[in-house]
Image (cartoon, rainbow, N blue to C red; front, side):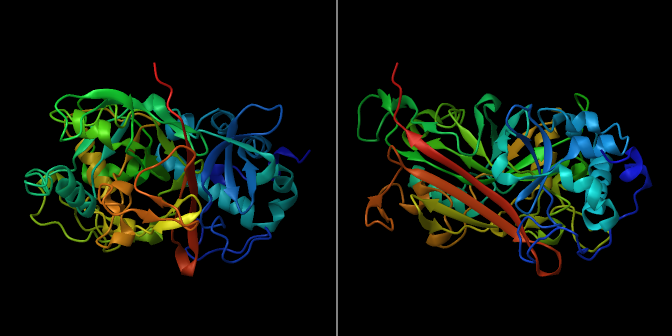
Length: 431
């Protein structure tokens, strides 16, 4: 057992260098889970309780025993079965922890103390990383919103009059957020095709996916206290890949006048690793342009590094359908910033709680091969998608598997991996 002073305490840490530091770990230079990433997740091994770890390469650093060896109180939050207690500590603690983890993985003098707590990824079981407090889903892609408007409202303007003035969203169901790899049971509900005189009940025939980015929120606010744009980053902890499974036939009948309900609430999948916003600093890019300019509370301001408080993210997606990559959306095309979404979410005084999650809405681009859902990709079933085995699809069939993958630029030419988010469709269970 290493001595308790074999590892440094957080308070004694110095900021990490701006360049990618060398590490005593045997990592390939192009490893998407290298030292510049260090995402958090919740894992267990056989016979042990779930706890917090950090992924580095193909291993998981068990944080709690490392912190205990250093005599740190943070061992308690890393023994927790979700990230929520760590999220509650706030942005200063998140950055200090990242500096500490980086230091013990790059400084060779800590190798003997740390190496026993690095577990092979193949030996761990991943769990849902957060206990989702509240879940909100936005609609932040102009390309997606325009395509859906043309499909659902062919005789109207594609965008509703409010779309470019505020980030539109709806409150989802936090209890049906599930971990990547969880099977998705085909939902049932009311459906009414435009040509039918009355609705019928049954299993959805137009089951779809939405490739999204999920934002994990930390810290807390009091009821009535909005989060201004220049403080949004204090609450944005990190991101996950998010799949907003959608029953389009149920959605089309029910969404007027109050928006999505049963067509969305049956399942939302997220990836197991939460990539921190600090790891994505190099992926920040300007928004593609907002015209008309948003109201003052949503208008970005210059930051010290010459960027803006309302920024986009350069994240590349890959959508795989039964082993065939059918789309490659890019998050850089999104109209609304994550900071703007969080600010608008709280402008009425709604609270922020540790473990809040909000989705970006479907990530779609201007070209067909960058559409992030099958409603768009098949143009509501009119243009079937051919898969690698020669079969054709418009919407999901029972047994189909969808895998979403994403990555972003890191510092000095590296890539930051977000991992993958998968799900397989199972037959409906009718009442």
